[in-house]
Length: 352
Image (cartoon, rainbow, N blue to C red; front, side, top):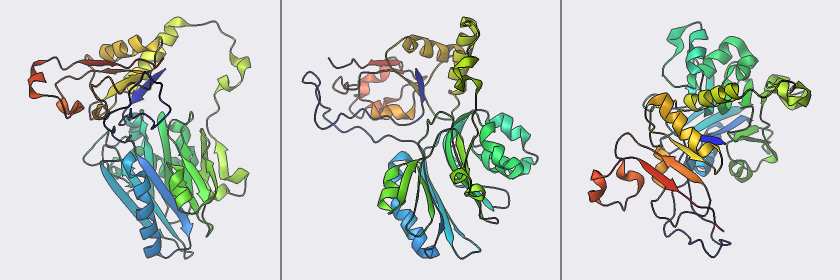
């Protein structure tokens, strides 16, 4: 299946257990990059202590977001405090889209790891254009939540994991995309606070108990915490029931759906690429990309991919195409390569 990659890729091999035919990399590949979120809600710590704790634990997910960090501290009316933090990989509106993102009155704060493909359509539904401060694909989420409440998750087309904190009501709203593309964990702090994080290690280090994976296709509202642990399923497609599969196979529809899926994942203000597993999609996806855009571009993530054939233990194929030379793919590339074609195709054979 196609995995549209807008995150830095790591092809580093494990320290041991490699097949004898596969040489371990001579240099360590870059850490994977994607946005990361961390939130602690209704903590009994003092504002100063909670801020320090959050900043310290943020370091554990900093590898996910090389382009910026942000934190918002909220002092609640009941004497508790909340903190919402973000580590950013800039994809859309790299200059202005830093997080947390806020409502116009700054009473709602949002930290999100995601890509919202229908953000332009959602932006048109917001009743006040002056609310927007950025062109980020994620900013419509906070304004739409202010406008329609809990139904916001069901309106999103994309992959996402996010937390919204309401400074006035104290409500916490969190949601994860239907398939679970973006990771999200939650747990309970020793002081009764509710925690959310893109990676479980921040919760473990913070001393949380009852750490669980946040279920895909659900949203959480602290207002409904007394019912089903506050969780509500927002994604209920008919195909969840196999009895709905009554029609014959529709190959033209499959093709059109595939092309549409490729096209919407090419949304970016930075170079991008395609990561493919061996199979029928590895030729069709790059062709779909070229057909839709006229050319495809390399993801910033390809900085982590060396031209050395030693980085081949994962057995996948990456199609890397760039509209212009980007010689930061490898720091060891000599200057004489500037005359070569900017197009690259790196094949990584499976170990035998």
